[in-house]
Image (cartoon, rainbow, N blue to C red; front, side, top):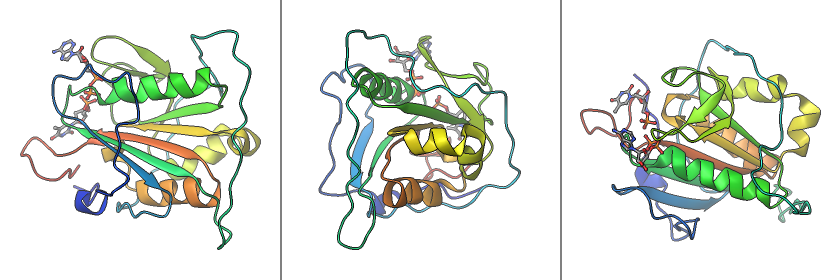
Length: 205
Ligand SMILES: Nc1ncnc2c1ncn2[C@@H]1O[C@H](COP(=O)(O)OP(=O)(O)O)[C@@H](O)[C@H]1O
Ligand SMILES: Cc1cn([C@H]2C[C@H](O)[C@@H](COP(=O)(O)O)O2)c(=O)[nH]c1=O
């Protein structure tokens, strides 16, 4: 059993619901947007594993959109200014739906996106994140996040603007990955995961 997030460290004045279209979940879901310097605490996963994946950038449902390259900002200390957005809630709350909505929106805006989920969640297959009501988006299923860059390809990774992570509670290396992706590489990272386990304890998987 692994500690996922020290949630109290995540609450920040920059809390915001990032999608103006969000209305669906019938249960509370927390949306937390952080500058990349805010702390998220998690541990590291073992046993790298990889399930077939075709690198992709966009499964856009939109058209007639010109790409908008995201400018990589660098702050005074030389860190890239990325973003970390966190979607927290219980099962069936709409976390994956919200992640998918955000990823599709970013993709429609011309951003290059990729989605990762834990390969521990096999309920709807491994090649997609799938909501409980059937919406899906192609993803890479991994045992740990540290293998993502190599699996995805270093050049393709460099071009990515947005990285979505579903079932984040299962990734022990969540903190390290998000910090590096946002701080070092200037990515927008959107993380969706459980806020607690079946005992209502802070998520320990
Ligand atoms: N028991 C259920 N069977 C089918 N669909 C459901 C059920 N409960 C919720 N849903 C639908 O699934 C959506 C939430 O699914 P999802 O985004 O995958 O949630 P989460 O990722 O938080 O588990 C809800 O908006 C609702 O429309
Ligand atoms: C509460 C709880 C959940 N899990 C597992 C079950 C599923 O694989 C995910 C949750 O997925 P969802 O997209 O939020 O429906 O987590 C678990 O292993 N232990 C638990 O206590």
